[in-house]
Length: 218
Ligand code: URA
Image (cartoon, rainbow, N blue to C red; front, top):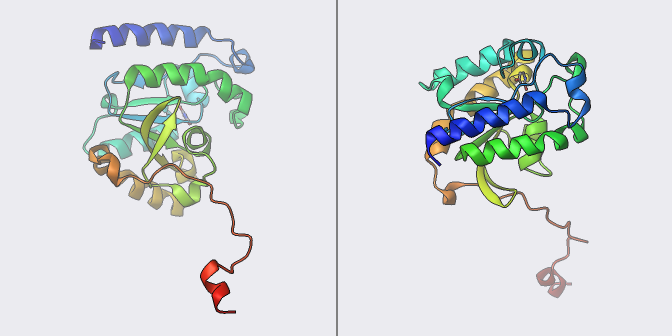
């Protein structure tokens, strides 16, 4: 698809998102927030959902958390319009509550269309809701900053889980980890598949700790 065709498709998707009534979130929201950025971006950031400012402006990450995200992107020598930024839900949850599983699932159709359109090399998940879509069974405090391969809807992506910028703004310790994880991004964009941590595999716990070799010693 040419860039022009991609831009045309993004405009169609964005119009549909603004009219979307697939979950209840549209009822209390002012505007839908489809996402924005370069349709050919190598890096896509996926956050949680629009807050007060995003709902008013119809654009993702334009409040305090957005200011931090934009500044941190620029600290790499990148420009915000060169990446793509979206969320797992696209209408503001009332009072900024957590999005519900059924709301995230209802919005998957748009998440998938946007990912398929942009085809980023790296998906940066911001916060646990976004991370859970791509890395199952993980805890953000354990896996943040570790790029890994993830199968999503039949395709493999490089997924880089990070803390949400709003969490970084709340706690100083997370801020330094957020910034340190961010610094790894240029390297992650250039990584080959072999450098990556494979998808998490749940291992079965051993029934007891006596292995076959040890049994010979009894
Ligand atoms: N927080 C998010 O997760 N997304 C936004 O767009 C803004 C704040």
